Image 1 (spheres, rainbow, N blue to C red):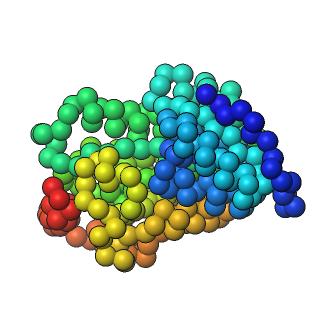
Image 2 (image 1 turned 135 degrees about the vertical axis):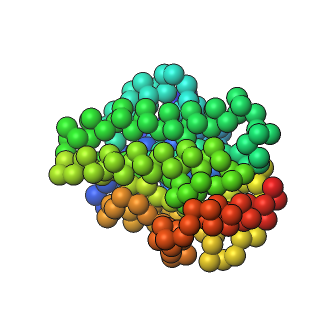
Length: 272
């Protein structure tokens, strides 16, 4: 349910930037992004399934930044999710599709139902929300849609096959949309994190991202900072770590079999 009492605690002196809708906001990157966007003057609609966490986050953001922060407890895979979001936030300046899930392990040992739900969340729901909000943004001549993709989307990833495939879809879909929208005042940005220590690893059954080398990992706050910069100065694809930008470039010139072998070895090292 939408949070009651979403009032200003203090009136900010700066000009409001508009409303930002953030899905998957109860933990990890989404929870880090909320105060970062509030610092830029955005009012917030925080969306996730865990209402208590959303309420606590909204209260902290209101107290710290003096913006409006509401919450909506919602599973974005539900059939009426878009309608409920449009009712709660019909004209956002920014939509951040951050909700996502994954499952590590051999694909032949995976639960078909669980993997199908990952596809619904990472692809189908993201598509529905994106295309549901874009027409309004285009008619107003402004807006940014941020898709939380992954460096896993740059290539197939053994032992993470479905997740990586969904993120490849997110990248392809979003880059194509951004090109279609040239000149409209609306941008679609794909932010591509690598390993980030969050609750995602425990839920996905993977190794601890905090054990990754410093050059390969980023904190939720660092990804939130990169995302905020991408909203302010949009470009189609954003990587937060220089190493990931290098990987994106280098893998284009390596044989596909080599890329797959390296990826498989890396994933096995993470506890597969």
